[in-house]
Image 1 (cartoon, rainbow, N blue to C red):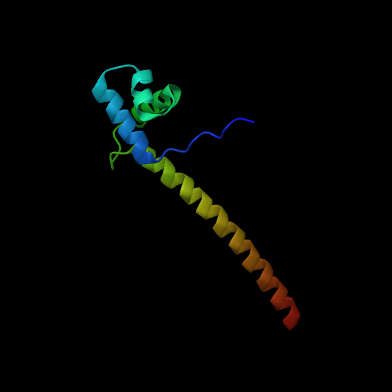
Image 2: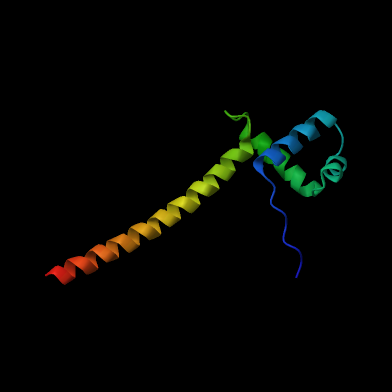
Length: 95
């Protein structure tokens, strides 16, 4: 089994894209200096270009926020389901 791919923060991705755009060199050179994969850097640049100018200036932060909100939504759905089952259980015991 291979090593799992590292997770990079939204700030790291944003800084990497900015560095690539300012450097005017190839993906591989910038990626080598940052210690990441050139393919990942190219994906980040493509996503940043597709996202357009973000309100907060970081298109990757929105993706991180969305991922966190989806995770929280799933947790709340599970909690709601448990509470619903508990209320049905206790209501049936009182009858």
